[in-house]
Amino acid sequence: MGRTLRKTLTVPKGYINEGKEIREIITEKEIYNKVKELAAEISKCYAGKIPIIIGVLNGSFMFMADLVRNLSIDFEVDFIKISSYGSSTKSSGTVRLLKDISADITGRDIIVVEDIIDSGLTIEFIKHRLEEAGTKSVKFATCLYKSNVAKQSFDIDFIGFNIPDKFVVGYGLDFDQKFRGLSSIYAFEEEV
Ligand code: PRP
Figure 1 (cartoon, rainbow, N blue to C red):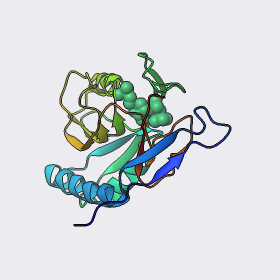
Figure 2: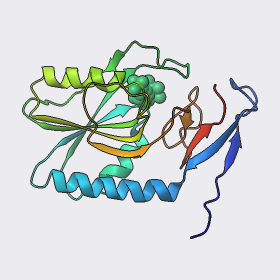
Figure 3: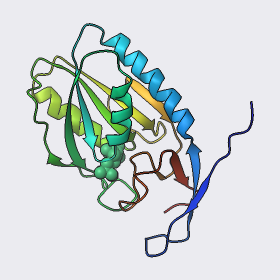
């Protein structure tokens, strides 16, 4: 096997932390393979059921789109929008509901799709919101998981990649609204 070439990019002029370098930590191919694997696992787990797949906006849109395209089961989609970071790079410790779920989720099987679980605050909040509505079951899928940092009170069902506590961007994840469109995942080498 050849070595994977890890690309680097620099934060452009005019942005906070301009000039800092970001380095690719997960390639497009690695994401592609992992998404297929997770989708197969989810399809098996929900065979004969029609779950509602709830994406957590904004960051999850790319992972969610790739994931659902690889499912072999019937499903519905909905979205919820939560704010936990504001525009800084560390979790603010507070969570606000910016857009609630629209679907009737009572008695339904739910899969929540996240781009990243960092402190775990966001999904802890979402779990309570869903349970209040009397869902039949709730499971969580995340592309990235900071296992050394996440402190939610329950296990995550479908995890793409365990990553260290670095600030990451790309594949839906932003830094000050930039870099969401990158097809792979990059990390800042230094603290930002
Ligand atoms: C990010 C990310 C998760 C959440 C994870 O969202 O998309 O939803 O933070 O952090 P936590 O585990 O510490 O709660 P953010 O609030 O940055 O919004 P965005 O998805 O619109 O970028």
